[in-house]
Image (cartoon, rainbow over all chains, first blue to last red; front, side, top):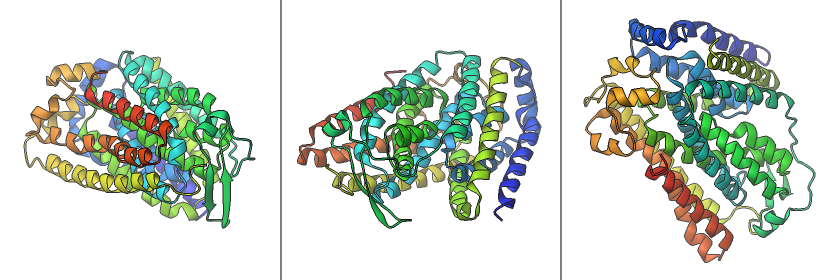
Length: 321
Length: 133
């Protein structure tokens, strides 16, 4: 099972990518695309939410096994391989990220893994950035957004490749801002049955960077886990599990702020959104169940490859190749 | 440090979040079933959606005569816009949870966090209002 599962997942992803030609309509020329899309009614309308449900279910499984958020996989994959316009995919991506993080929130808060005291100032910074990013995105041409999305996704895959996590970072003296805000505490590490005392440093400087992370999340409809976790773990010195949990919780607020902008712009279609939310939620539950039997390292590399491919495709679409 | 393990506000936030997410998700599924089986007629017939979903947002709004913003409130008899209710509920959960913890923060005279919570609520309400778009 350990060795077979990543291979099976890889082939499923590869098959979906190959099958996506007929789904997408092959061409990227807008006039041809419209024609093909209208012609693609030979594929009945109801087949799209079904395909979407299957693909997002798979994304949910991969996201959990690779330890990334669903949004970062959803937007590049769905925008590259489905006929939906990027505006609607970005809007859906935010709602998908928001729903996932909202559902995980209560458990993470109750277990003390996510810390509200740390998450609140970070969420404030990312919200400001996300709203600015979402507003900016609607004033830019689709090609620019598509190109920038491709470049961002390729960067994310590189970040995943080089990010060396630290389970329990070396404890440093708390920074000035974290002292004022009285951030710090103790959490119980179940696997080792120990209490870990934690604090954060460099919070002030990190808030500026979190505004930037929020901006990218709002602009492309991505969750922000890919950037939040390395920031919290390596830059702020938070234990890895707390970094992941606090990041998930923060995304619920970040995505909420930008999703209001997309909703008010009308960039939300229930026929795309609801199957995506349902698929990714079910997929993430399946992923959580098979996680103990899977080989996380192999799956992480598969996700890096899938992200890089989707990023390159998005980049090429953006520059008109 | 204020939080040795779990604080009152964290538990209160988690409890309200749990109830709200479950309720909104249930309504989301229910309204989508109404939409997909056309129990009430949608504004755009489901079979015509492939003609619209590939369009850039501006063109889509023009062709469907949808004014965006909060105008969907006047179109709730259409099953596609009915689905906006659970979406708004999901997007409103964080605002509710922040409002919930303000009295707890006030009781503890946690002034910095009262400011942060109020600022977050203000930002989210501003985004929700449609003023920024």
